[in-house]
Amino acid sequence: MIKLRGIQEEALDGAISSFRSGGTYHLLQAPVAFGKTIFSSALMKYAVDEFGAKCLFLAHLTELVVQTVDKFNAVAPELSCGVVMGSSKDAQDVTIGTRQTVGKNLDLFEKINLIIIDEVHLYGPQYQKIVDHFLEKNPRLRVVGVTGTPFNLKEGWIYGDKKIWPDPFHASTMDQMIDMGYLSPYRYKMAESLDDELQGIKKTAGEFNEGDLGEMMQEEHHMGTVKHAIETYASDRKRIMVFAVTIEHAEKLADFLGCFAVHSKLKKDDWREKVDRFKSGDERILVNVSQLSIGFDCPEVDCVVVARPTMSPALHVQIFGRGMRISEEKKDCLFLDLVGNYLRHGLPSNPKVRKPKEKQDDRESEDAKSKVCHECFEVVEEGIVCPYCGAELAAKKEIIERDEAIKMMEIEREKNAHRFVKWWEKDAISNSGYHGVRFCLAVTNREKPVFKFVTNGTAKQEKVRIRLREFNHGDIVNIIDTAYGPWVS
Image (cartoon, rainbow, N blue to C red; front, side):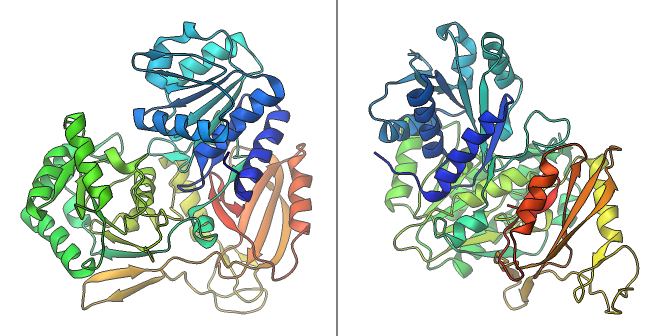
């Protein structure tokens, strides 16, 4: 039987506490290597053992269902586990299935108490139809969304004001997992930006049009950049994954590099053979489109080459995750960003997530107006000199060290070494017109303080005060991005 890590036990306690507080929807934010499937299995085991609950785990890929069944059997070998996927229609106390097959066979289930939805940033009408069906049968239904990327291209953060998902009951970050030793250290290099060329690429639903983008990236000088980058910077790397735009781009790039390409049009046996040869080390380089961005597990990958520009922060992070597993002989993973995704999204271990356009503009104008004094940590709304202590207000500097000789930028990860300085609060009114309190927290190694607005009349105000009173000057504070901006984990 698998024993939970401490961080997984914290998440399990958080889920149980969140259930007790009421509400249908509950959210877990946890990155690759957290063990989201182990956590989900432990939560379903708890629900069955303590309450005799009927549980349903939903995934969108066949491989994820297979992985989840294996993990659940390792966590709870004494419990039966049914599978509803394809031709299999076996519903048990714990059932694991694809949203497609479950959605077409809802009559297999009498009542469900707990639904867990994997990769919940993909939540849409098909999932909602399933949830509504079981919610009608059981108003006390609990639905847990699990994701490492609680944001998407259409709406930014999937939780927040006027959204069905509340704040996460537990939020872990890639930076935390790296510092704890559960994810590999990494190096991140970025070539000069492609922004000039990308100006001519149309956008479809906010993302670069794949057809146009694929044609552009098939041009010989772009494929030559991939080959040159691998030869120049990754000569000592043992497993190299390359991310392409389209199937045609992947196949042409693979021919150019002299390696395999895998994609959705391959026959299943051919796909499996190529992937297995890469995993075993018989093949050093593997080109794919987006098939392997989720659910692919090869810890030996020590280099990821990004030849796919994207407007999606979630895809940016998922691609990154393919190289972050730890392996015995692996000291770090090298990321070669040849398309400037860093400029759009920041480092994928702590990405910048944009809100919908109408809110994004308000946020950026507010950020432009306010600064924090690095001497006295007072918030200064305007000006270049602090009116409280007279210190000059420094502009924010990017942590990019450029090596002109190789024409790539080395981008360093900022360690989670923020230390507590002070906190304060003041009355405020939100953009939506709600009256409340704005909590402010100043930490070292951060130009601006972090803020949290809490509406009047809620118990959360006192919870925030209690949490902030626990900090002593110099304590390490873990800051993470949330739908409302950076705040304490």
